[in-house]
Length: 141
Image (cartoon, rainbow, N blue to C red; front, top):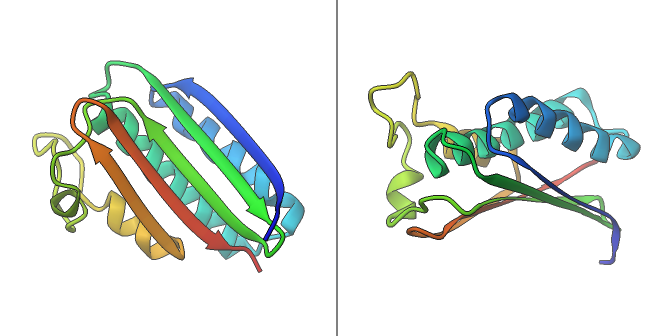
């Protein structure tokens, strides 16, 4: 499986850039002619990962979010959303439905659950005080 396309994008961790990330990943996979469902699923998963980085990783105080994406010769999309924020001590706890580090906000605690349901695989790596990397994969038919 060889890489046929790749992109890397760094952007400021502010809520306005969540839409920018959604549009960027849409443009990246558009040449594969994805179904509306595939496009929506990928955009939603990326949106959730970016929002987590902004809200939880950086606590809405700014920083840099990196989105790195590759497409391989078998139409497998891999997207990494990376932050250098506060990180998580217990990734498994954070992946539980309805768990949130912002209980006083309007957050539902469903971000990882949504990402997992819309992508083929989800991997979360995190180190406290160093940041988090969310890796999502989805085959585009």
